[in-house]
Length: 212
Image (cartoon, rainbow, N blue to C red; front, side):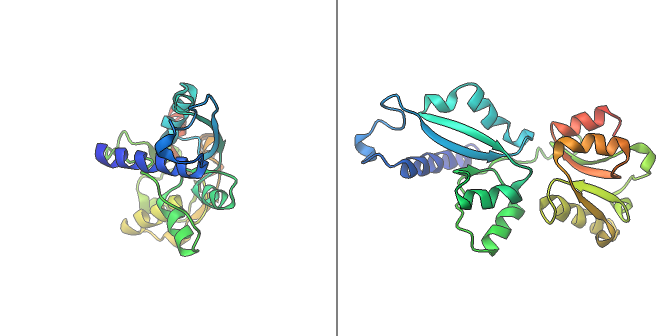
């Protein structure tokens, strides 16, 4: 993992210098060498996966490397990928399914580095499908015929849920997926607006504190 992320970081730095121009890199001390910051915009989601970049901005790490980073919050990777292509964002955090869709549409995106990974611990992971006890939902197959909130439709949330439900013997085509922002999901589950939701941290912990 360390080798992979280090290599990815080197690719990111090279991409930044190439985009900024500024002459021959061999004769330049790097971004910010004359006290000026290079402005870049990064599309992110308000989830734990992107915690590192928020911390980097807060602690001034990017400024130390000559970068003035603006974080733009989006609802999901499906919105971030085209925003990078259109130039609204210089960089963006996305997911595998969104990148597959982008590649299928021949969008000119370059994958720079891994952004997040599962812990592998299903009891203490960064996300889960949560429901209230009174719904009677206890297994993936029980989601058949129910409403489930995901942050974006036809993307990583409903794709993975559909697969897990099918593996459990349920019919994923009978699930009603509802598009909803992660911050709105805990209240929607608690109130019964939806039967369940695919929620990532920190909103997963909030929902569980409310009984989900």
